[in-house]
Image (cartoon, rainbow, N blue to C red):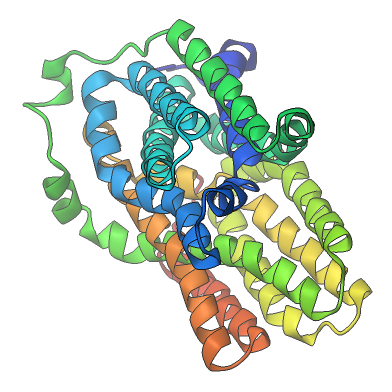
Length: 393
């Protein structure tokens, strides 16, 4: 681990942020076409939606195994293995066009995602000094978002030439590139086993010893994740509710993504200089308040303005989940702690859209958006109560 109080961005630019960008590019290329591919293979609309959700389910199930794999193999090998799993799954989609094969392939993508994200987070934590941690992790999240933004455009180019398979070939090339970078990245120099303590610490032991953190800050992180996934559903649905056509709705979504991507580094700098609280509370209040305001937007202009504010709130929170996890993680069992931390975040990510759809079915989309927005207020209260005002642990 880097011990001085400066950071050489050039040294970590390619080994850390390169795979992150390519991973985002891969995801961005395939996410718009997964359901369409499933439909082409004979799936119903409901089944196609379920198959598209399997990546999230695979990630949820893979978080704890990912922590054990990363702890045993090391970050570099885990990243390489995750890229390989992803490539194999994507190759299955384009070479064996059967629905059950696609189910397996999407679960493989989810497992690869959990390993990849945990390993690159752990690698970066070990590579940068604590004084730059939030900036580094915000940049890590930001580069993934940039890749995800570019992915659909890259995929669209090959789809024009090759059909839907073109998007998967873009993703395969991106993950192969991520794997090559991971293979050539320098290994993390770790303390000797005696310095780390006696033996390996189990996940169950970490869950017990850190249950207070998981039950407080973990709840806040879970709520942030619920807000983030819910906004991805609310924006296009409310655009449709206002009578906007698909092209205009996509343009709004693109503008929101552009705002989201533009503020990750300044937000990380604020967290490093003034403390995590200075971003955690504004992030959750802005996202929650914006979601609560969406039902009251009756014109395209007001909807766009509120959506941009929602994107800004999400953007300043870039890397906040990873940063809080890094701050709270014990150095001698970091991967085990982060595996549980990511599991909690993924539970929120899965639960947000479920809550949204349930309230919509019982009441209305407006009521659902408002109800999910209330979670942002609750999250802000959680952080105000339990997140220390100081910069880091």
